[in-house]
Image (cartoon, rainbow, N blue to C red; front, side, top):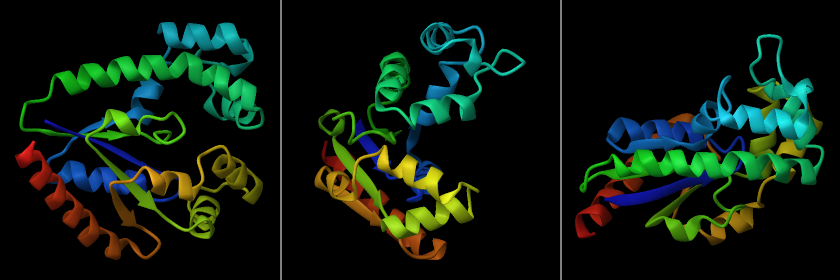
Length: 200
């Protein structure tokens, strides 16, 4: 089994890279999706978030109001750390369960937005970083995700810098250009991962 940590700044195109690698045969462990699952209604995760942040972070149907919680934690470093202290251990435990279910010849791809920030690079056999210029990230967040420029800059500032991410990379995918330039790069990375898996 080869474990791969995939990361990249918000708006860099990491999700598209993860989708492509999964389509080639990687077993995808999506930390963002798991992070949503562990705070669904009825979970201990949601109960812990409400205990920490109050019922004001709940929507009318009892689910987590993500935009409201996001507005709190992206404006205050200490509140973000408090949220991470609740969610990250739950995500880690679930990710480990999913990896354990994989076969010995599988390539297990962990899609981890905060891999660099949380010092997780040593836990993977290979770290793949999806890289884009900060100006490209900002443009995508405003144009494609509908964020204001201030919101986008706040989200970007809450993450590791470009140099920090590249410092932990074993393989880098440059996603500064158009989408059709991405697929050949991802395919080449997949072939490298298969070679490494065969040698493991």
